Image (cartoon, rainbow, N blue to C red; front, side):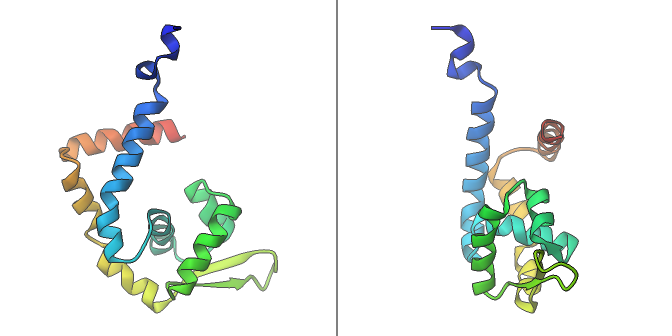
Length: 138
């Protein structure tokens, strides 16, 4: 066995395992809002940036339109977003929050703190993790 091929020597595996665990920690809080984790990410983008094209959302979340389209349709069926064609370019679909989608922000405001509490990390440790993740993601 090559030492460099041991699972314990891979940087990707602990990051993968951590990501899965953190997403799992979100689940009970998101279930209360009837959102999946990817739907929550879309809502975060819309709450922060307002109206966005599908492409802009995809760029921010590193998702392609084939992944986003069914997710956006589900959010639309829940009356959280509206999807409309751009008047300037019909190929572009614009996503806006509905009143119900805007109201959901108030219900979600405590989720980050609730998840942080579940992680058993100090605020400084969370800040270090976010800094490292940002460096790796750029």
